[in-house]
Length: 275
Picture 1 (tube, rainbow, N blue to C red):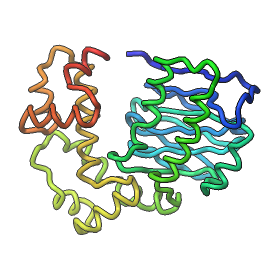
Picture 2: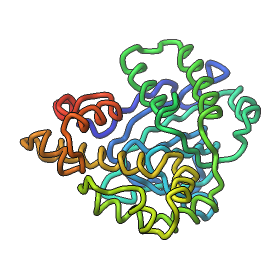
Picture 3: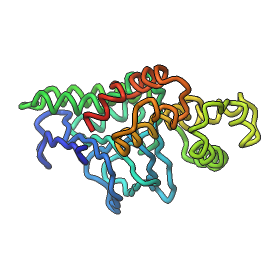
Picture 4: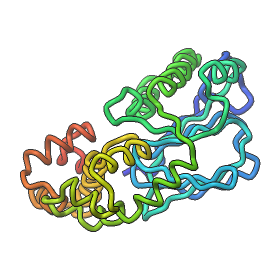
């Protein structure tokens, strides 16, 4: 598996168009970054695999799957993985029209965003990276259009959230998240058992997860199982897919394959061959 896919589209300091992409990439193993003076352009970073934490204005914000952080130019920040490995997708962009467009869309401050997994934004940055790898953008026209589309789509589908609320919810949900990490192989886990773990009702649990991660607790648990399946498919290359599906809490291998394909866009065997 390639550790870092990165495409540089515009050299530093060049501004050929009102909007432009400097770089776009997928870092499968994100290293810690410390920028006391920030980054000179707009910088978007989102979680592709695992989980990270970003420090901004003295506060730490968790970045689980389904979330990302938009950093305005020159805002000091740092980020790092919170587990064994954190995969990120990122986009850096700028241009004379960037500030005006961000202001128009209400993106006047650096902050956290989350989104539903079935929205167009969920796969946007990854699809852009695939496109620019396959079709060089010699004059930057396509990239300029894509910056506009990125901001519009983020504004439409990204749900901005106050860091204080996220931190409070994460503190309450942390025992359940750790419990999920231990119980994901059990196919009998249900929402009522999850809710009892943090002493709330099922309805309150759904509200907490949607407010914090933008998805339901069941969807979060399913994403965890798929993430564990990815690790096993790569780490245990001789293990049959049927065995891996059981190890990740799926009673039926056909259900596992269908769920994996819907989430990843590839069958488990195809994923294993590619990575």
